[in-house]
Amino acid sequence: MAKEYAVGWGTLALINAGLAQTKNQSGLLWFFLSLLLGPIATFMIVVLVKVPKDEH
Image (cartoon, rainbow, N blue to C red; front, top):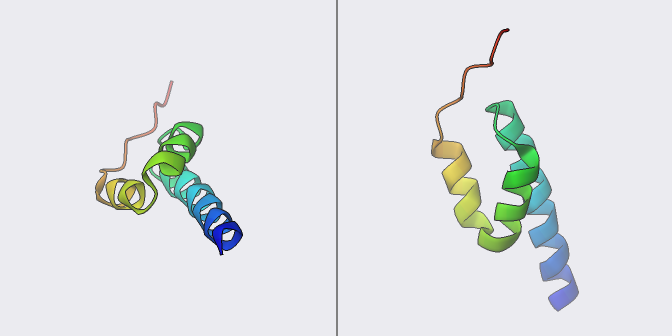
């Protein structure tokens, strides 16, 4: 049971990293935050406003 839980948690962290990148946030940062916070991090990413890309 614990193995399935860990796989699900890791999958959620990968999904959150992808979500963060669509909002121009650091995917790596959100991956690690998601490992710690799990579904709370998902909620935080969803409510974040998309950061405009720096067009230099």
